[in-house]
Amino acid sequence: MSTPERITVVGAGLMGHGIAQIFALRGHPVWLLDADEDTLNSARDRVRANLTNMAKQGVAFGADIEEILGHISTTADLATACEDCNFVFEAVYEDLELKQQVFADLDRLCPRKAGLCSNTSVISITEISEKAKHRERIVGTHFWNPPYLIPLVEVVRAEETADWCINETYDLLAGVGKHPVHVHKDVPGFVGNRLQHALWREAFAIIDEGICDPATVDEVVRNGFGLRLPTLGPVETADMVGLDLTLAIHNYILKHLNAEPTPSTTLQAKVGAGELGFKSGRGFLEWSESDIAESRERLANYLISIFAEQQAQWKGGEDRL
Image (tube, rainbow, N blue to C red; front, side, top):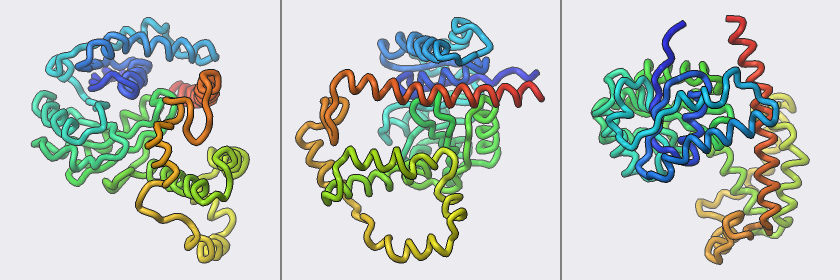
């Protein structure tokens, strides 16, 4: 069996500690780095809490939780984290200048053949790589929150990304049980966020126009076409119903859909009034502390059940190798 690749994760916050967990779970040695002492010191405890919650719901890891945590080392020194690494995953704040500086430093400090990956959800990978010399080894890897439960990772080719970097990154992610997909063009929002926010724009426009209330929007999605989405994506659904019917519907409906380049007026008003959703207890909907806890728990339980099923399938495939 080959030696597991050494992984460095830059940023130990919401996404970074979860990305570290993914690789530690599969036996990879991981350096987890953050400049904030509190964030860094709490990272392993947050990973432990994630794994403990998953284990309580029947997820089998094939290793003791403390053994998994033993694969994660923490540091505030970038040079230490970069030494002998094979891949780096950047998960710092969504600020272009910050990310450009991080990748310039990574390019200078990391071994020449190390792949340098950004977890940005919307910023151009080409722009992020501008200050680095060896831009052929910089690639986008957009994980979804929580990264240790949602399988998708968008592998995004920047203008100068080399084929070897794309292929090796894709293989690494598939090897730890993720579901990587190729994104061939570096465009804002990549694929997933373009689709997600197109839906949100229309949802908010429906509220703006008084077509229905916010709760009804969610009811329609959860109890209607949303039930199909885990099994049938929009392209397969269109083929199923017939492209002739899809064309006829689009000829009629598209001119009635929202195409404004600016955010929803209701969304802007609510943010202006400090109605921020969970953060303030009120957004489009009202949120008590118990409502917030129930919503988070419902999502976590749903994602853990999917993870457990996919983990069993991944392990079965591994055993057949």
